[in-house]
Image 1 (cartoon, one colour):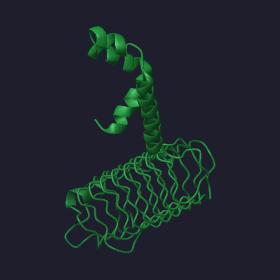
Image 2: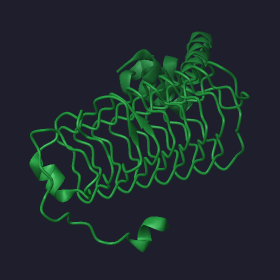
Image 3: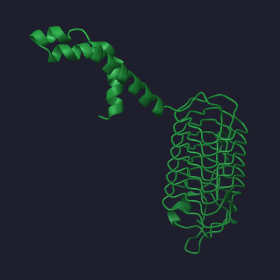
Image 4: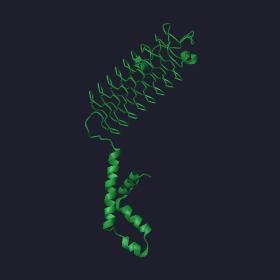
Amino acid sequence: MGFVEWAAGLAAGGLAWWQERSRRRSRGTIRQRLGSPGRLDIWVLSTVFLLAGAGMSAQAGDCGNVAAPGLDWSKCSKTNIMLQSSDLHGANLAGAHFDSTDLSDTNLTSANLEKATLVRTWLKNVHADGANFKRIEAYRSDFSNASANGASFANAELQRAEFGGAKLNNADFQKAELGRADFDKAVLSNVNFSFANLSRATLAGAVMQGPVSFSGAFMYLTRIEGLDLSNSTGLQQAQINLACGDTTTKLPSWLSAPSVWPCPPDDPDDKD
């Protein structure tokens, strides 16, 4: 057990804990002498309270501070508020809660949002190059026209997220959940979709200016109509057979289009 955890436990028990401990360790005359705390005991307890408080403060984010570059809002709750056009460049936002918050036009360059929750959050036009979005929960969030070049979305929950028009060069979506996500007109160059769930996601209309990795990605009814996949890597015939392409879809030389693409009409539920 670390010192801070020990100190916090002692502080939480307070004087009652100390007296109980004294009773256990004391018998006879010693018990009588230590039955009530002396000056040294009070000094020790006071010191422990101060150290425990300092330790707990060091672990908490500065939740009361206004938005500013480099601040620490880790694990803070910032839900249902207006933070558009804020400057959070380099901020520590790990584990913070931004559900239904408006972060449009905010500067999140190099910010750390690992494990943050951004459910139904507005992130339109954010500047998030190099940001860490690993393991975020961001169902139905809107990243349209965002600049997130070099950002990591690895293992993120991004079902039905909107990435239309976003700049995502060198972005990492490895093992991300992207069911029904929309990448229409997004710029995808050197993007990593390895082992991502792209079921019913829309890649049609995306601009692929460089190789994109689809190694192990699940592409059930993924929309790839009109997409140029000729420079993509990791694609297998089984993935293409599950996807939704058309005669304008360009595939790598080692793959061929299925005789019939297994694509139903647009699901009205996709518009929700």
